[in-house]
Image (tube, rainbow, N blue to C red):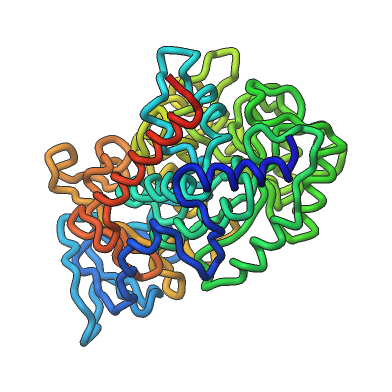
Amino acid sequence: MNRRRLLKAGIAFAAAGLRSDRLFAQGTSSASRSAKPLPGRGEFVIRGATVLTMDARLGDFERGDVHVRNGAIVAVAPTLSASGAEALDGRGMICMPGFIDTHWHLWTTVCRPLIRIDDPKRGYFPVTGALGRHFTPEDSYRSVRLGLAEALSAGATTVHNWAHNVRTPAHADAELRAMRDCGMRGRFSYGQAQGMPDDEPMNYDDVAKVKRDWMPNDGMLALGMCSRNFGPSQTALRGTISLDMARKDWGGARALGLPITLHTSGPSPIKALDEAKLLGPDVQLVHPLLTSAEERQILRERGVSYSIAPIGESRRPASAGVIQLGELLEAGVKVSLSIDTTGTYGCDYFEAMRILYNLHQHRIGARVPLTSKRLVQLATLDGALDLGIAERTGSLTPGKRADLILVRTGDVNIAPLGDPYEALISFAQPRNVDTVMVDGRILRRGGEFTALDYAGVLKEANETAAALRQRANWT
């Protein structure tokens, strides 16, 4: 199997099934033509909310206002005067930065009707491995759009789309288009297709074309590279490359100025990568389960970050290692939070923070203090730091873009409100997310989408899941 054969296969699938015409950056797919226009960036004042800024200089406000104009945060204070601005009632709500997800395989979302957690033959890896080879660009668009709809409903405003099934440049265009059509801020990390030979390097002509077509833009989208695994892996479906291939792939990414992300499932590759002089501040690792104290020191010195996916990682067997949040914090390594996949569980950042806290207390406790406020920072500002966009988002700092959410505190599962951070960690759920604003656009209000046609998104996702199942002959 090579790139040419994959391209031919993609053309054959297009002719036989759902439309998969080349989705150029300025073109449209059948799905995106049905998307409603995004709301405009108006002028708003959120009044009377409990404001958690994640800005150490500003602090928090038991009752405060947030002024937004043309997509930017203008001011945050106990009381603001803004004549002509639309008032949004924030009373009885927590106003805070939106969640920043730093690692999510959005292309797998439509596979979840077929995945079973209690049957190894029908688990996440067998299903996505079998169906992944049959994805058309339209399938990728629909799957990513469904995942982003769930992300918005859960309070995410930025997502790192870890796309390790980019079969053609058209697939990359489709996923980027879904991100743009949904109004989501994020990074798209371009990865090899499922089933690509491990001895075949990434095609950086394709990646360069995607960069030319999509970057630079309005600052909403960024491009990266997701690497195949290096060294022994717990699954062959992610690809496993040699050190020489890693040098080629990572060198190609760096020539284009792209950040690199890598799973570290299985024995830790950190020392080998460091000895090869491949680690640097442009590298993000995923799943910190088996690092040594020496390796954590290397990560701190090289400026490497680690993305933690606590819901999925907590389901792994003990032999796979433990979530090393406390050790990473103690060593001064940059960390962030992610969902990973919604193939076997839903998108819930409150649950992710809750699990992370519970496991930390169970393993380490007071030896490495961990507050509820620190966990909220992990899910917001630290995600922005990990993705290199902290100058734009991650806190309610005047001058940054208005990526924020309102969380209802009068709902039965959370009221009456005590400490707001405690409420978020111990009680909140996605259903409490009332309002989601991304770059000054209100994408959800009153728990409902303002532009996204979710009924249409669901219909197309169901069609794609059924078509993929038939093409892959998955029974």
